[in-house]
Length: 309
Image (cartoon, rainbow, N blue to C red; front, side, top):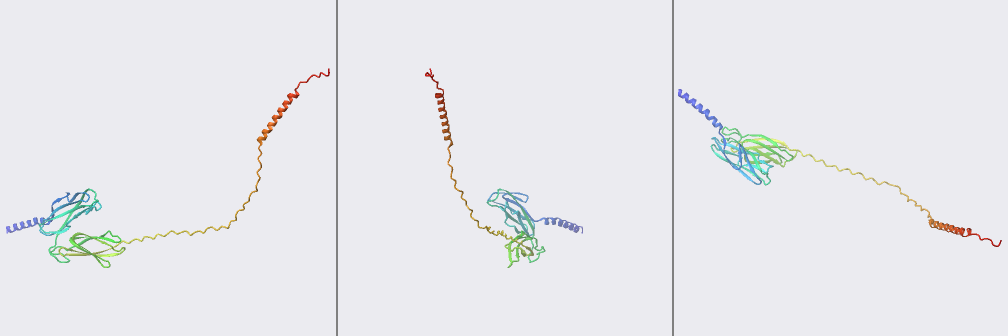
């Protein structure tokens, strides 16, 4: 009896020891090779225009179960979309005790700014359902779920719908139009983005999201949004043209009477200077004659009268 009790206690201890190990099992990164350098989960790579760099990560599934894996890099672009980051397999399933290689690619356009760029590597995984069956979980695993539905970047003619699924799944989005339009994405993702374009302004649209995983499990959600209205552009009012003012009417003017002044006979000009000089000359001559007369006649000595003796 004691041996049975001891054996039971040992089995219980082994169960307690094994349980944490099993719960901690999952996907781990065993190696990182290629271009650039790694600081934790951040990939740092020096880029020049028209250059491409790659890095290869090896993943290992340490559990005995198949796991749905989703990997991504954040952000997907830098330098005004001149440097982009991509993952070759964003969503896939790994078998238990298996390895898988993931390739990251950084591409620079011809207009890229030379420098060191950094993106964060993100890894998510969960237990894959064992067995199929539509609309619910298989093998005791929870059903496929669509969550975090958001409608963003709504304009007069477009909208962006984002949502998540708890496992990698395809997307089929149907929105109301005339006729209905279907957008299909057959890649298995956990993070989904659907762009709706060329729709009418100021209109309410209903949409339905249907996702299906690799095992046939599916989920459906719906929603609605209203596009923005186009504000009417006011028609400019032409300025009022002033009414033409009629020219002022003035009475006819009588032509002015032109009076011709009487002709005046010009007076002959008298030249006084020559006459003055002539007068002065005559006066001088007269004075000379008088002087001569005075000295010659008046001052002449008288002769003695001899006859009277």
